[in-house]
Figure 1: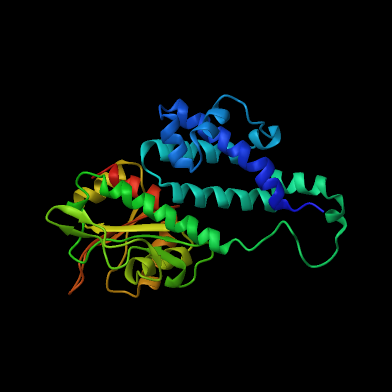
Figure 2: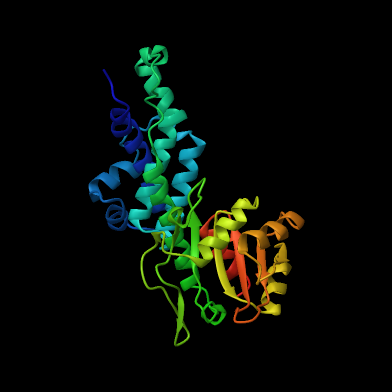
Length: 298
């Protein structure tokens, strides 16, 4: 009897840690810094980077794992990702590899009888919603750091405040959307984020994102900023597709109309109305991408 968790401990972790430690060292971090980031000893780091720990060749050659290691090394070395966020992304990768990747293959080979198990249950298909929620919160955190380090962002925050939101797959209510509790505000020329991302705390921007998704947009994240013709033009100059919607119509109906006419729109805006502040909404596949779109024009 061999559990898939044993393969994670015995095969995945040594391979993953050695690849990540190696890349962090190549990016100029000391053994001490690598050890602190990974939560392991300096002697373990030394073994990893000097090839004293055996890697599983099939895992090391996995494109999914290679992409993860590249992304984590870049984020950790550059300070754009915390160890907790890196852990969440690694956990998501593990579950994906368990469900139908290399770990699933290795486990099936180790326990051939699993392929003949006929019950309505798959050992390689665990519920990953909790981990997906952690991944989304981590994405919003990284997007917020991009915004906080973007010169000029504070000046683009509207009077009602900004918010950066990202939705779970198949999101249907604001409870499925992670965002900043309250709003991002301009305080003395500095963008101020009041708290850690949570689900169900954005009414307005989350509703706009959900309406866009319901209207057929592929977007999973959104950011609102103050409307200005110069801003809209700059976003268009960056290659984004912009489209206007009616601010006084129901948001679901307004975006359904706009996106039916311009389904590829990744910037939607309204120019205001009676008691309605004009706002631009930047859409994208994740919070980091949305924040980077804004940084390009700020």
